[in-house]
Length: 233
Image (cartoon, rainbow, N blue to C red):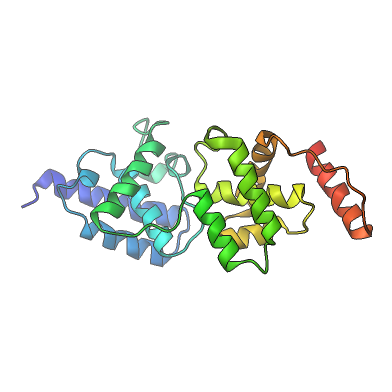
């Protein structure tokens, strides 16, 4: 039977979930699924035993967001400053790593099959589901970009954000007119996330220089100029 301390922590987790979903304006579905996950978790599980209630809440919310096909996960940094949580200095730079571990533990404990999460898997999904929107040559280029830049460059970025940034970078390097908005819709990632990360991906890409090819028409000329402007900013 759960002791009073365990019950209290469970309530703290639930309260944190309600606060985060409200303050971050997440959907009612995410809040409902999150609270269901809390109820399903064993009170003495690894998830509930040894982590800060806000870390647990963020991990649970991220699992719920995947189940509700929401946009990219929130992280501890998004919520640690919320006055309503009153976390003080209890959360630090290691907290996001803790959330990542917790997310996997939750999926393991509840036998939840995670949504495809690695960049390679995400690109496979794009190729299979959105071939009419994102051309295969862009997906090929994105795969090459990710292969070239390695894991160091993208450490700390969610795989879906990495994939979206690489896809947009690939649109630029292949001179393919696909907008950030379109890539965001395909990847279920905000344009802000793409804008904030694609340049880092491009800078790390060892062969990102604009090909010196003949400009075939006015459309490609305008596109090339747009790419040059992106690089010069």
